[in-house]
Length: 339
Image (tube, rainbow, N blue to C red; front, side):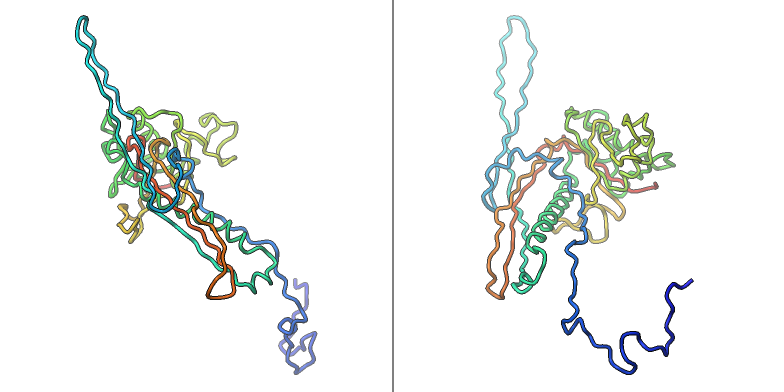
């Protein structure tokens, strides 16, 4: 039932005489244009780099091109002891690796003076918040894609396992097709993938404290459909379907990310083809000892534009990262085989 009567095609508009043009009072300045002071919320991809890497060697990074020299701990040799025998002497020598601060990202925006005067919100503050989030997302994606294939050979591939050598973690071309539960022929439960990654790290004697795993968001959804959705199996007070928290599984703190490398046509990283086929994703597991990251905003400034009447706002962040120890990093190549 219509609440308001619908005017016929010949009816006269209610506010204007017949045959007259409708005046644009808003354009003439009689009716002000109202802008909401509330901004539509913008959502950002979850970043994980700060949680999975260490910044122990960040030091004093002054400018693009600096480097940090990192000494690695030597391995002390253990000898057999024999009565009345001479003692052998070991002279442990550690290695050296370099963390090169050789990458930089920047942003530069301009706020016209007229827009600044007439705006009812602080544009520069809004842009500053967004620039910080975009910078984190950009760097996270770059690092997560760059460490693809940098886990030690015993921690990836179809014959992973330093001791067993029989752990299938998938490779490009023959990835692990994962499902939440009830796997069919050629499929693997997502929980089984986690257990395999844990075994690979166990065989490398990686500490249990501080382990993490990063997986695509669809894989995290498979966990919620797995047997762990039952409270008595997950060990939580309520099912993860109620609180949405994945928590810890097999000593791993679970992180979900949309920034992990995935195979698409023409995918590249640092100018090189990304070694993943379409539909393939990487899952990383490891310890914070594996990856080091150093970064800082070396320049954030506002200055007057020379080309127009406006204020330039720009920032530069220099950073570097390095897989210090590939034995503390494991990798699985997976594809989504079902729910």
